[in-house]
Length: 198
Image 1: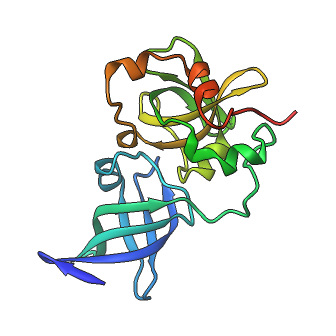
Image 2 (image 1 turned 60 degrees about the vertical axis):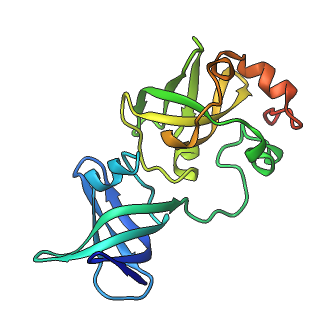
């Protein structure tokens, strides 16, 4: 725990977060009271939601209503068993996930109750399918319409699909030319050719 200008740095696990209510709570790794995490603080980090059991580092402050997060420093998705979140993702995709480029995208629509939605990658006309389990596996609880995100994309059985979702500020292309390259060309040019399970 470190202190800075009245704020204390804390590591903990997200107990729960409800984007509809606009808040949730973090359990401090060092014990003590739960820490309030407000949606505005999360949005300042570039996210609209966070999955339960995600590991977070936050700067907190004491208020009359209790301890509250003032800033999110980092978010790590919940620990997994190493298996792909959905059957369409080959275990090799998970193993080589970092070799796939992060693409800036915007959520076209997403329905948590239906378990899926679509996004559009900047400069590409095709919709990208996003499954709820990929969203959760990536550390998000939900996606909002119009939300700016980044995607690692593979060719799925019915078209392009997200293999991973990240906050929008993770993809900063070196040039506009990079945005205009074909996603499928990137898959073929990379050391690892992304594919799905048969």
